[in-house]
Length: 363
Image (cartoon, rainbow, N blue to C red; front, side):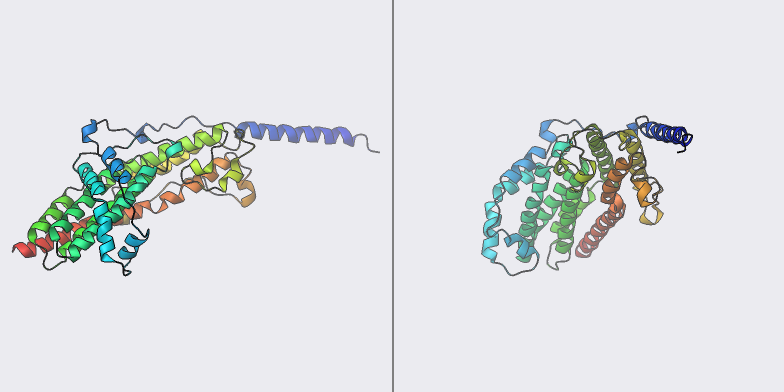
């Protein structure tokens, strides 16, 4: 009826398709790879005899779990338990304890290089079981007035924690090492508060606390490790087939529904690894630059993702999947600077408490 309209509509359709194709082509261009040499994770090469890693692994393998399984946790949480059963568990782990102490006498604990396939470091997670046994052993010794043994367990935990967290390959390793260290510091403070604890026991603990290196250095290394592993994960998602979320570092299982497309690589419009890594690198650098500061002076100026648009545009803009990945990665880091400040304060406080009690005994 209106023959002149058809060419107009056809031309309009071609113009729209051409414009969308141009937008897609421009939006699919990834950025250049980030200049991230400052975030490189350097490994310390040491002789085997200086490395406590094998000792700690052997200690975990020799670990004899308690019966019943909740025996140690019940005791630590203040529930009534059979003291003889506790002592039997401690005795059954003498070999494990000896192996751990053998490790704490070494200079370093350098774990194997971690890839995304073994990111959860099961061997390091098993070390938390050793922590509970040593903690219970120290609590029992202190309660029975065996202050030398209580001091020994506190020192073992402090040294164990220092070695685990000092050269982390993952953030998880750093956090586990910090938890072990803080348990040792708490045990040392409790010992110092015992009226009958001798000066020699407190001096032993004070010397171990004095040798704890600055926690900031370990935190900075953990942030570099986080960047390295996050970058590997981004590359894996971009290349396809998408790896199983159970193997991906701290990323939610529901993400599989977002990024898996028949196991094929995602469109470059959806995920641009270089652009995403640039954003992530700037955010990690922000954490690192804030790490040496006091909590009052810390200011996070970067954002892991660009400013959010409305919900519709958020999912159709270029690199939308990359930004979603960053949003999943970032909450893990949000509170780590605050926790670092707490840990530094806890260490300073523990040193002060033990020093004051020691001074009172010596003067």
